[in-house]
Amino acid sequence: MQDRQAETVPPPMQARRYLLLYALAVAGGSAAYAPFLTLFLPLRASVVWGDEAIVVLSYAAFVGAIAASLSNIAFGWLSDITRTRQPWIFAGTILSGLLLTGLFRIESVGLFLVAIAAWQIALNMMLGPLMAWAGDCVPDGQKGTLGGLMAISPAAGALVGMLLTLPGLADAETRLVLNALVVAAMVLPVLVFGRPRPMPHLVEATIDRERGTPNGNDDPAFPRRSEPVVRMWLARLLVQIAEAALFAFLLLWLRSLDPAVSDNRAARLITLIAVVCIPLALLAGRWSDRARRPRLPLTLAAGGASLGLAFMAFSQDLQTGTVGYILFGLMAGVFLALHSSQTLRVLPRTRTRGRDLGIFNLTNTVPSLIMPWLVLLLIPLFGFSAFFDLLAGLAALACLLLATMRES
Image (cartoon, rainbow, N blue to C red):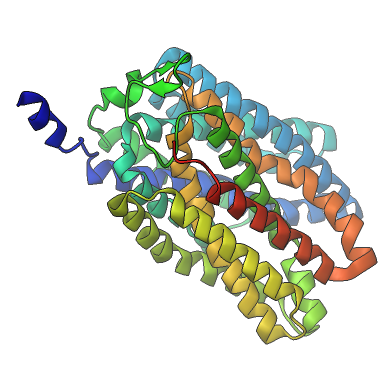
């Protein structure tokens, strides 16, 4: 009788205060790098290095991607070893902010690249443990909701960049100081006021290697084997390649359909998609929690992204092309937001959660190394249509990987 009563006891839920403050902190993570990499850094490079700006930016992107990949794994792993996340998050927030404010005082290319690498290392001292902290505190029954809240992140990065570039607000160096202060104001509240409810079953659960079953929560939608981990990693990588390609070449493609398209129109389109994506991801995430179908929204979103890309491949005018991009942008945004939280379901070991999330984070950096080769291979020879056909195939493969994942 007692066993039956224990089975009917609902699993503990995390406080809404922590979920909201955590989502704000993740948005602060986006605000820590998005305005700098997309706005401030290109402008600074053009002022200091002139015609060599593209070369310097290419080197900076490559060096930054390597530093970010390695440091994200390293600090996630260190937070596993020390069994605490908050001190690393605090130190990374402060140190990355200090390094950011000093970047524009450097004019030597070599020193600038070293500074970029150091900034990325400090930034990922914050980001790696921050992502792992959610796995320690948010149960499976709220991971969809958390993923929906995390959809705020891209919009927050874009909004901070827009506000900091308002005419007459500040000069180039002051913008970096304001950027660092805004990030601290978004990240630090969860450390001070979050006070998450303890979830020992999320921290102490381990895997029986021989039987391959967890002694903690058992989610049949994401069985605890290595195959789901690989499928989730590949699915995100494939969608991220498409997303990175569209982010980099959207304006060029729009102008191939209509040469009169302005950069402001492209920016407004990106911002619109990021904002509309927030309620969509929240609805999908909440539904997945209530229906206990965490994988279905990911599968449908990947399929929708593939359809949007296919529509773009056949578009011959700006109106139809925009419709295809909106479909892709919304579906890819929902996919990436929900995937970030649902990844926590498939990781097999709680004691190395930070390290394993760092390996998953490679899906954010590897596309920047793959995508340029795809562009050089396809667009000059076959045009944007063939390029979008390939990206549609990649997103469709992501959908297939998730749809065919075994339940048990």
